[in-house]
Image 1 (cartoon, one colour):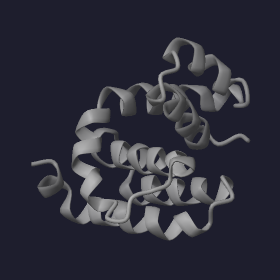
Image 2 (image 1 turned 30 degrees about the vertical axis):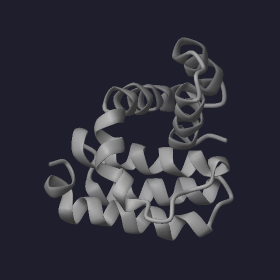
Image 3 (image 1 turned 180 degrees about the vertical axis):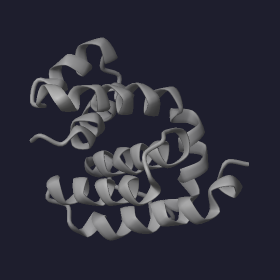
Length: 130
């Protein structure tokens, strides 16, 4: 795996489940090339810093909910939303990379869900965060 978004999603799932961030960051970043580590760390720290804000805004988008085993998909969507609203990454790149990360996780069924939620975020962004 050499996808910083997938590594960040795995790290964040572990942290939300009660693991130590200081332990998870280096554990997941081992699999990444040196050039991708700064992005990975930014995605982890930034998404975690905004976690409750993202959670409150995005929870209504998961009308059917997700199974516990699919927490990585929820985190990829949170990471994508973090990129849309709080970074300079272009919206099309944030959405596309999150969708590709779903496919990297071998959860192609989630690619459409991820795309739909992030496109909705792009379209209705400010309304979601009110």
